[in-house]
Image (cartoon, rainbow, N blue to C red):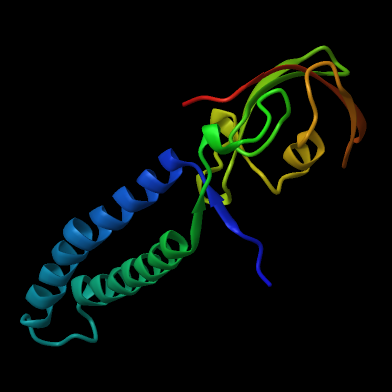
Length: 159
């Protein structure tokens, strides 16, 4: 069985917005370009036609993917979490590592993870190590560079 597709309400809204943009804006524009290019004659050397068809396949593939993800998504709201003193999906966590570097991350679904913005997937090693921990807990995390110790400083569940 596949793992569940957990997602925050904000993450689901982002996926729906992307699907809406692709289906209602990008796809019709690309279809119009392909249709125009097809009317220009020889398609074998028609860059607009060839690129347009390729772009159309990419859009259709992404639309199918997004529809499936949205259909199978399990929305997890902050208020659904049983214990806000522990780390679960959707939590914003501040921790300090062994090098005394303080970091704040939010545990989110795979489709909404953006490490540069501090959003990490719930299946990532850091998130898995932090799950069910509470403020004051020290966790040993194995990384490619060796072991690192993380101390949980703060847990917050954004709305």
